[in-house]
Image (tube, rainbow, N blue to C red; front, top):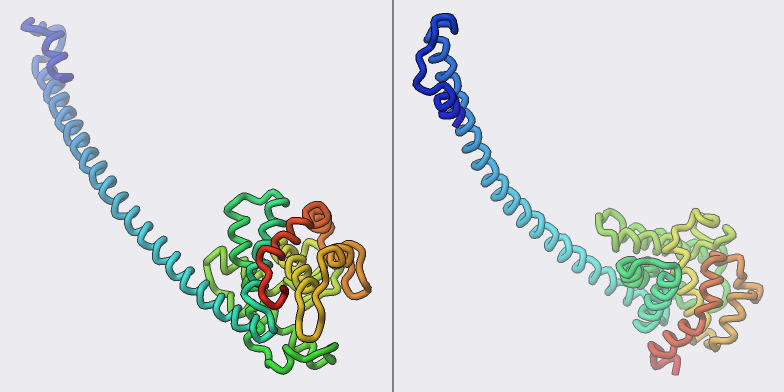
Length: 279
């Protein structure tokens, strides 16, 4: 293209001796020819590179999608296994699948009122049921023991938080990572009086604070062989005012505000997912 433009501009004119030797013009045209060949070659290489890039992108996209699906399948398989362990541990504690389901819904209520995105609400609703998975390793007679536990028994019981976290650690899954946080911290109290690490305030992950309130509400409402269930109004007063054993200082103040404003949703969840033992 450039060479043709040069020839058109020069035309058939003869080159004057004063303009330099004729071979200079010939050399320039030859150089233009060479540059045009190189340009065509570069364009061809660029087209080939783009085709290869598109093919590589397709291969990469396929590989990434395959890896994503395999990761999801693995996560679901692990989640299902852990959930089965959780249900088994719940039966040891005379709890039921309904308890696990209710805690999941309470947690989602609190997360929604905190302004969490739908995806995050769903995440905690799936992670919350695994909060007591560590109880699978606690002796049955200790779990079902009535009354207060002495020092040694209490330490064994409290270890279910550490055991649960250990069962859930080592995964790249956000779901299982949140479940691990919850298992470890759902007995921590805002005022530092909880266990296992006596964390205070914001040291406790928000997921742990949410499930702590959810689990506590359901524990108060639920009937056991060693205690009667408490109605919603009484549970509402205990959480907001305390009863000597449960204190408002145990809960995140922001979550207390949300509970005070949305407590009827908790009652609705309990009634909707009430199991036979609570009827």
